[in-house]
Image (cartoon, rainbow, N blue to C red; front, side, top):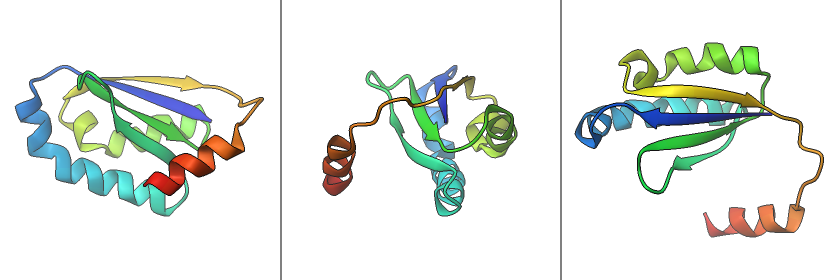
Length: 97
């Protein structure tokens, strides 16, 4: 799995202008099961995407992100292997969506 940590490098006004395109990008990769979850950081200075893919594949995928294309943020890609999972917590969180 991979965590993508996006840190905005521009004002939120510029982020908002590309947000719908970014959501379309996210939806594409949710549809093919590459993205597990995503959301805004708090404070809203970026976002996080949890991916079901290898680091190399994610490095190519993010090149399609309008935020990346328009240089609106810095991207940190962190690969990890989940050794423990709290299934009950995941199910509870999914039910809230």
